[in-house]
Image 1 (spheres, rainbow over the protein chains, first blue to last red):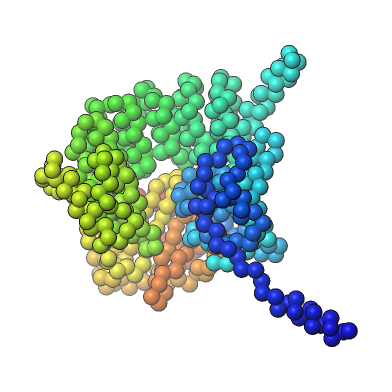
Image 2: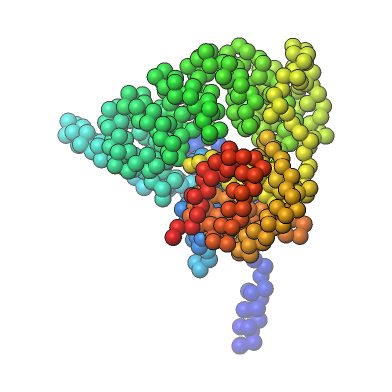
Length: 137
Length: 383
């Protein structure tokens, strides 16, 4: 019985981890967003998927040991003052215990993306969310 | 019904205050554009009053760039007055944006400020001032704008060419055609492509022909389209090439560099220099000035750089944001970057900064030293 349990456990462990799908920012931001609109299918199809996305970290005054940050699609909206449109960034929350330092080079983040138009009263909080994420490059 | 309306009216000042606060909240960048939109849709004197109250209390530098830009959509004399104050405040972070907002308001009363800004030390202000003068149809400024076809920075030259064209003067077009050859690369960033795309977007509109040119392709792939564009301008301006000002001429690229220093500051402007393989100190990035370093100077430079190299380059220093210094250090066959934000420069980098001041003075004079020093103190580590 014990041996059987070990075998089952090993079988479970050897199952390969799901491969993260590459997600291009273009496919998230290629539409004009209007308040509380029905999001295009091209966008909602990503909901709940394990993805890896490459973009730029939006700088805040903190440069080291970040646990959350906005990943934006291009250098101009990260680093030179332009504010990103709501469908041009992902709010990233790193996996517990992980931190990242700010970099103005492109970074690749892996995690499960949630496509969810979240509001707090009159204020839109965001469209794209990634939690339990890690910086892989 | 009346009660609901009264409640709504009572609630409005609190909402306006929250919108102004959110439009500028440093920890809520995702709210900036939303808040600006809400304020613009709301409009009216109460919005202007709250903005003035907030600015008086928090100071100019509490304003975000999105908010500053949004001021350009609020037609109120008090907002215009505030924008005039902002462009005159040399320490305000977003002066170029404030100039653009004033331009959006078409403020004739700022004409002299716009004219003066054609000589501003920040290229963003020079470019914005040209846009503003175009909006005011200030053709009296044409001669001064024409001089800016030879500016150090592509964006200013290009805007001058576009504005002159809007004034019915095509003498700036050679600058844009020449930019189709732009090949400026700052280490891993292809600034040439940015210039090529900008010039091409404008030229294809006025020529009603895209020349089959694609700015993102390789130089070889771009060659046939470039030839077409040059033939197009040559039909109306046979001597167009001679009209390209010295600073706008594209030089053959591919110089090998051994070190690079980049300082970008939203607050004070940018500064770039490199050391090339032949031991030249090379200033600028679109327009390059070169001076040979002696063997002793190169030795001192190397010694100061070694101290910089001893710093851990895997971590950033100082505060994040759009003001930073970046040191490109060659390690083997590639470059590693040391990133330093506001108040983050470690003591080990200070001798290097002092040496750079000395070399700049010796090779390029006080103007270069002044430019370099303009923002240097922002990065010094706080005591």
